[in-house]
Image (cartoon, rainbow, N blue to C red):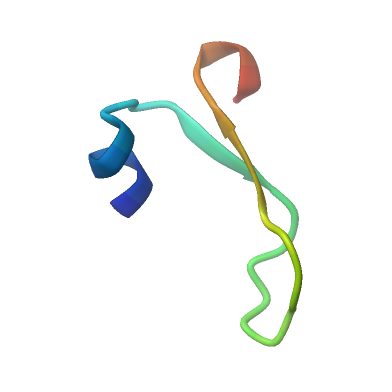
Length: 35
């Protein structure tokens, strides 16, 4: 929700795990083509 408010884009998805112990980069797709 924070990223949606910042960008103003409604369709945002992620590629990967939301494991709280994971470290690294979370890939985020923005827009109709990416979700």
